[in-house]
View 1 (tube, rainbow, N blue to C red):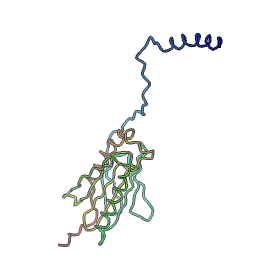
View 2 (cartoon, rainbow, N blue to C red; view 1 turned 60 degrees about the horizontal axis):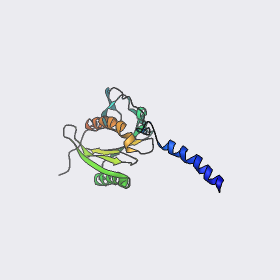
View 3 (cartoon, rainbow, N blue to C red; view 1 turned 45 degrees about the vertical axis):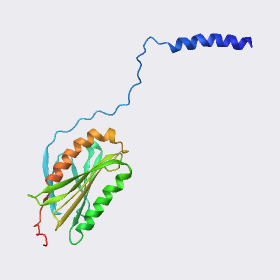
View 4 (cartoon, rainbow, N blue to C red; view 1 turned 90 degrees about the vertical axis):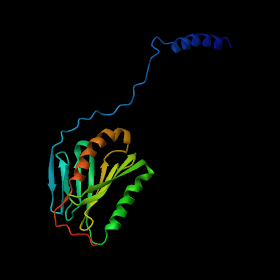
Length: 197
């Protein structure tokens, strides 16, 4: 019994001294993320043989898919890709629009918010929607553009990393300016047929 008391008498002063501190303003080191350096924006026009063209920055690299008008735009600088799907329109325009919207709203399980914006470019006859998917969804940005009679182009941006919206946000904001520029400059290279009235 005396041994227990003497052990506690030794430990108690040590504990009391350890609780006091000369520097009461200790803060744990916050988690940090890598500092990004953004490339200078220099645009050029991508023009393939599939009926559409658009302006993209030099750090976007278009990869062709053999035997298809679908493309992958690889963004190595940010470890991301834009997957483009091109569909010639016959009678399936409404089905393509509904399917595109379904693919966007499949992300609503992980998304905090899905913001929609219309794409209206009368000069190039390019119309559609773009969707900013806020939250930890796999694809933070999707869009489609069509002339309503001949062409339908759909795109989805993916980062090749675990979806963490807060850490991806600086890269996402930078890349989205260039994706929006791409959407705004979509041109159809074959003759556009008038809508049936």
